[in-house]
Image (cartoon, rainbow, N blue to C red; front, side, top):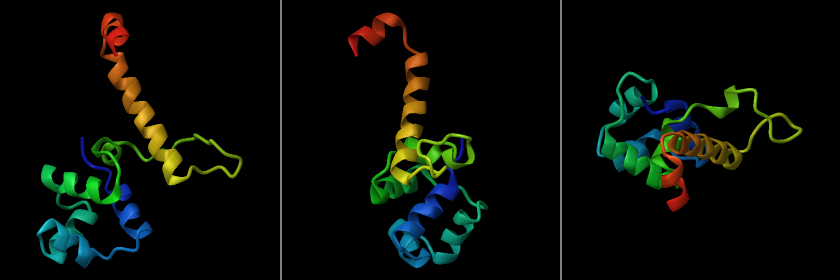
Length: 109
């Protein structure tokens, strides 16, 4: 599974960070970073770790589907806030995790 690069880009834009800053943080050139954001080059595991720490989100959140594209509406305005989207994504990941556990293992949680 690949990182949802749209989330990475949206988080960068939301924090008003430029591509030059992200490239420097990741130890790559800006051209290399632009290839990542255009989905032509994948992020490495260490880059994913750096990005998730920078944005304060889990690595799993970066891999999850874009919840905004789903027909899920938590509020009357029809869209989810980034915080709500992150909580829904983490809930879906938790459901997948729980689905792989036996009842006995869940009782021990």
